[in-house]
Length: 372
Image (cartoon, rainbow, N blue to C red):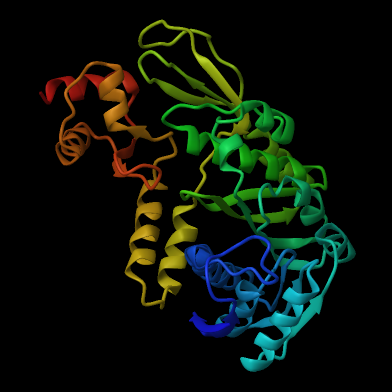
């Protein structure tokens, strides 16, 4: 065993490479995920203005929830659950070593655990191995009248179109294996969460959503409201993509089958979430709450916050130039020209060569052509 420190928690974990079959699973590569959870909960707590009951239904080592207990104020109780009794024993010892007294522990199936706490939990985290789809209804059932929900998916291959039949079977949506595949996958996941919460007359609206190499992560607000649930569900629709020129758009209904730029037939993906995937105000609250000494975290949040002001799908500069046989301009010069014409333009976290703009696609291509 080795002792490590993450945030304000010291924990003992097995030495060596991470393996799913280890009796206690701790993944240091997911620290960013957990850091963002802490900041999101702090932002939510400021909005809620009340004490919070937080739960991790698939906790493994319990590091996320124990950090919440240690690093967030006004936490009434943290609830740490896992099917693995060895993991829970480790979490109990970690809580004792770190002098955490407001933690409860249980060894249960995640769905049983969540269903047992109907309408009671203010923060719920779902971070399974693979797909979270099997836990979403129980999560919705357990959410209090106004709650923060965190969902991680590591089955990025089906969601991103590598295994489209699996995605259709699992999520009821058709993915898209093109340059925007990760955004499409993220939006399919959001739609699945929205549908699950709608079935329980609760709304779900994403506050911070992002894609990393091995996972998708979404954190959003839920309220018990039939009207708000209906509005959330009405934001589910389709992505339209032209494989010939790279044009893309989102709509709550299936639009014309031909591309408005090159007249080629459009490919349809979805159903998926067509609304904003990030809230600039919520992420700004997170940035204001950030007292962690981590430059990568700060830069990542800054990119998310800036791109959140543009709701359209992102573009990969190299890919759209390749599809349209154009020279690749310097991104800074392209941004300058877009802003001169009154458009927004920002980097995106999805791809190193990606960006977002509110310019129409035809105008974007014309600007790139003039930048030879």
